[in-house]
Length: 410
Ligand SMILES: *Cc1c(COP(=O)(O)O)cnc(C)c1O
Ligand SMILES: [Zn+2]
Image (cartoon, rainbow, N blue to C red; front, side, top):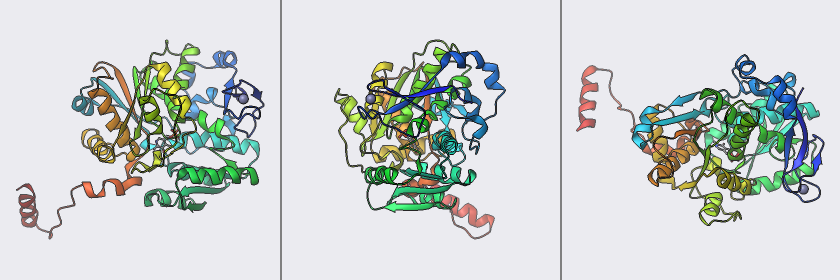
């Protein structure tokens, strides 16, 4: 049972039945799920949600699929942590970290795939597929395993080992393409016309995208049913960024929280920052780039939702920031040292961007700020391997330990 009503074109407003399609036949605009909010308002409540499972399925009222059919590996409802140490280091009194590293496949992509794979199964697909920068492939492979579906995951050939292995272990067919993500995506778009497979971020993308709304719901619930003042979010295609805002807005529309004044700020790596560049140039026109950054999970040179991300940024009064690879590594290190959270490169992008926005005076010290840390660091060890101290290697004696310690501190 779902309260989703239809798919609607974000450009011309034409409506389509809930099917495995993602673009408007008339204007090629992207399709988005619409809901019967009056019906939802009758059944949703803070109490009903609190009595739900400790996963994103507690928000099933606002998802476009049947909870009874859920492909459930317990994605979501991750911790929101009061980051006092990092807040002090940056000059923020009310900083929170939304730690999505601790999802089942160690990234926020479990949210989008939980919804997309459930919908794919509802549609009767027996094969899941995706074009991925790494994390999506991990999650698609895991959910396909749980759902006993076949999986084909397509990735750029130069991904980190942790992400290649992190897919392969679930036994999908991993296809490493000699090219960047935009090449991978082009091949997958052609394949999705030819094969009857559910490409989670192509033909079932409208449902996939809805999974990201749950980050907005959770943060509001975890703050005691209120929206934060400021969200700092990593952007690849820009979809996640827009959907956190949609999630908060829906809660407000349903009367679950008061009006949303949240500023949405987006961050990218300088080596792949088409959305930030457009924001800085004061245009809604995103110019594609060729990615060159250690933040491979965000390396989409031609972001599908870039335009909508810029609109969300403008409508919410948010900002944009990009960071060099060196700043990204410093961001990972700062988060680890101050809060005990080991993030992947996308997390470094967020912390580096957050620092920049504070330094530029874009974020007030008294704002309630949530930084979204969307993936775990064990997947991108290459990025920081040269930047950590090697172990003290010693013979098994107290003496050896004390000598080694003395020589390191000297
Ligand atoms: C995919 C991804 C994002 C952002 O994805 P969008 O395409 O912008 O929705 C952010 N962080 C990580 C770690 C990701 O894997
Ligand atoms: Zn249209």
